[in-house]
Length: 498
Ligand SMILES: [Ca+2]
Ligand SMILES: [Ca+2]
Image (cartoon, rainbow, N blue to C red; front, side):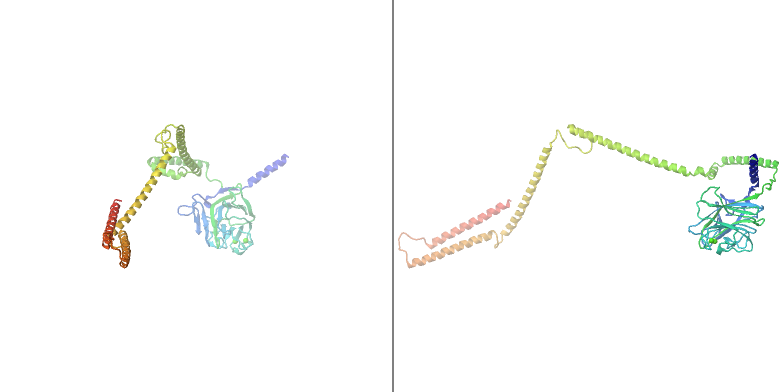
């Protein structure tokens, strides 16, 4: 039992011992922030074609048609084995993208060409992230490794299916987090691990391919390239982290002695102190400038965080709600006050007491004043008065009309012939004339009869003679005319006073 345990421990020890020693190689790496310098260059790297370097990433191609770009390390490697972790994004609006993204380890730096933005016939390793399915097998996006001794041209038509060392079908487009590939070349074995970008967990790598007995150039250049075609994606490299790998016990010994190390650290401490002192002096001499620089270096003090902003917004919202509530409270108090006053007035009315002065609309006088029936009587009287006034008015109007008619008639009265009084007088004259004629005719008939049978002469008795009769009749007519004239004058005199 103890023997078995010892064997297991020994195996674990051997495995641990077999793990290579790794060293970060900053001259073969890039990462943000401050990835690119102000002039757009990346330290220890150079980029070509449509590639653009920013502070956070290198956009190897933008998502525009037919673009090609690349970035290459300036120096050839000076180590045998290595591991590179590439963190990148391939994003595009289309359901399909093109063409793809490539990692290179080649004897010579690449130039622009047809293989994902790089030249054909390279010498070394190419790892392709092929987005577009040229052979229409429905197996893209696809990750594959291809070794070239400089003799082969990449076969796009078949997506290099016969040329690959190995590969795996993985989707690397439009992922929530950047995708990652760990490409390790150690003791002639190539291992590619892939992180699909669905999480941000550093441990979520899975094996894509492993191929042994691969003999790459002893030293070479690292590079990334990408290309777009009819379809286009953004191909963005966020980090390129290179580690040199050494079998246990072969890692380069530090060529700095302990004494020298101590000397350097002492110098560093002295320099640090000096820098701090200079900073303090600068602050004293230029307080405004120092404050501005502090703000630049500590943006947290100037800019609020999202939590602070949220809290600020909540506080503002609550303050405004509080203001509104205070306003409402004041108005409710006012309403209650009015109600109370109205209630007291009503009570006063019901008890027949006095009404408090100066409180809006005066209430109807009750108690010592007029009663309701009296007011109604008053109103009735007023209505009657109004009616009487109306009657009087119509009466006056009638009188006015009549007066107008009378005046018109009076003005016409002076005319010799016409209607009115003159015509009446004429009619009377006419009647009198007719009567006189009838009397004359009767008298003539009597005279003719008396001539045939003469009256016996009776001496002192005598009949009425014709001349006496005519005189009598003439006097009568004069009297009638005089009366009528008098009557009409009297009437006209009376009408003038209307
Ligand atoms: Ca393809
Ligand atoms: Ca394919």
